[in-house]
Length: 453
Image: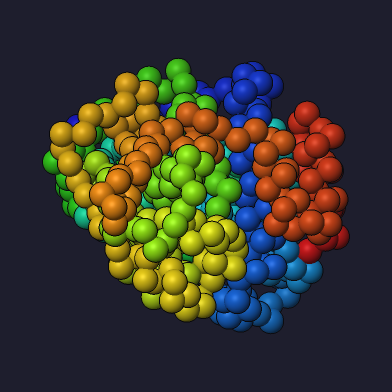
């Protein structure tokens, strides 16, 4: 088989420059950066684990603390900054997700790129690198196939390694040979298990992946390299991590016809929980608009999903709010008991007794006879809530296209409102740049980030 790493790098080098991108593509990239910054700042403000993660940096006393850590005044070694910013971007599960990745691209890719901007400030190349990183991450995820995630791999960390390395190699203008070497090293670094969902290790996957991507780029610049063609070679990526639904055609086909940041595009979130909860959340809200909830009258609740449509929602009976980020039962029970899907609801505190009692009435159902909607997002995904009352009545609602998904997207103004709600005045200086500038430049943004951190 031809060297697929070399073929992929050649595609990367054919990507258009910033000035040649469509206006919508530019806007999607800038919305991704805005949302990433909001997520990092919010973690520093709310997350009780962040001080421990800060103390876990490997180079606390180095003279090379020159990389920005978003949300705090102190800087860090670039290697540690990748770790800290990657964690902060993903810690509260507020960050963007991409349905074809089944993971969180910006938390990994932008954390790696942010660690490099003290060496080089180039707005156009920064956004070009971001575009390429998301594209490569998406294509690697599609190449290994959906079963990769369903077997237990956290795609944010596995496919994310390739996306971050590709973005960093492009941003630092590595030559073709070095670029190939960097991508070929990824297979020896990828890891990340979904068994850690509901703990601080899940967001650490994003930070550790960005950190290892930085290390790969550092190794290659020092002349350290291994074998080539490790995507398709024996004992390489597909050999180790592939499944029956893997497809090497996904790596290169139709490159550049539509970018992953545009189609399907980023899924931006309003709530600090897994995006797989978006369907049952919107279904529950739709039901509540049409029915005044009386908890005493509820006999049972069924949540309907297509097979594997709830694979990320690993907790049916969570013990605290952190686990509740990955529980449709918890989110539905919060709403039905009149509670908000607030930041506080998804922290580590114990779950209120009223919420636990209602969760005990909820079961998940997978009915292959339920038809898919003609239009849904992602394709062939839905969730339906059905409440059986003690008097025999049934209340029901369904969601096929949740708010915030690319099928019903958030605009830049919605993300600014998200920032204002979460951060108030702390967000205003850098938010004003996104409000006022059609194209946000690093030259205008970075001084504000440094001043407000």
